[in-house]
Image 1 (cartoon, rainbow, N blue to C red):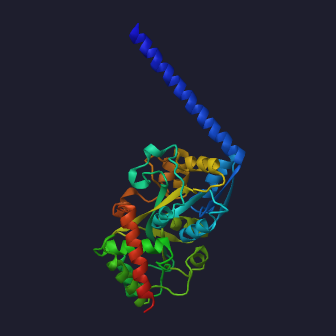
Image 2 (image 1 turned 90 degrees about the horizontal axis):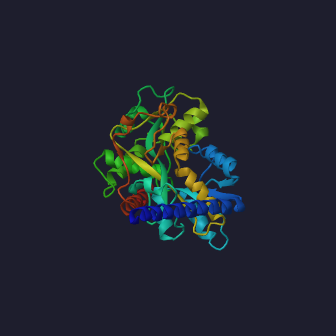
Image 3 (image 1 turned 90 degrees about the vertical axis):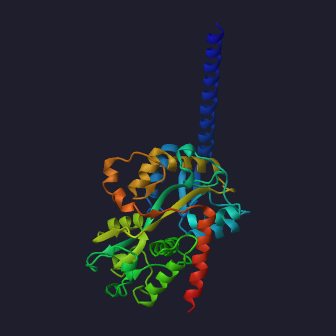
Length: 347
């Protein structure tokens, strides 16, 4: 009798808890629908399939989405300026700026619905950010203009690639900063020793291999102005698809950096409930698959459809990828790169 009574009590509690949980989820969704919209920064439609992701969220939940495209540095500037009149709800930020995000106390605490299945290296223990995807620093090569394809960072220093390599300023571009770190790893450096990467980037410039006066974007690639571009692999695939050019993505065999992209909710979000629905979707199995359809690497271990996997490079291509060891050490490495390039650039 006591055992039966105990089981009845346990099952009863379970039913009550389930009802409370379901009611809570229903209330949150109702609150989100009442808000009806959310605003993002740095999450443009053509980036890692965000357009289709936000379209799905709107169709399913009736939440309208508006984005303002900007860099990670600009995000921080906007959020600081908007503290008294907030605009943004959610954002996508490069891991190299996550430290500034936390230093300025700009992110709300929210552990999304898939939180427990996200590896510790891909999330903040306090719930202020989590990374839904990552990208590898790679070479995007126009095979009409380059016959001998570079395979390593030091290959790019060869005379045959004179005035062929396009990048951006490591002080202001996340992928250029990560490229310096990747070149450091390839030449015996590390997060604690970025000098080999700065030396490499200096040689790239001084040899004349770094093309000057060209802004690296879809237009410059399409015009053939960038025979070799240093890009994220997912961005390289997107440029290939959008231009129809014979572009090949190459992961450097001597090592590269896997850059994390963190998503967060603003501490002053005007539409916090709608923001939570959007963040939950990004980290769901469906959201992670849709990111992979945009060639990004999902951070959760999910089984991707073969139709999606077949369009990406094999896992073996990423055998020598270096991920950030921790936010403090990675942030310190980024600062060293920015300060170091400041000294190099004025010479």
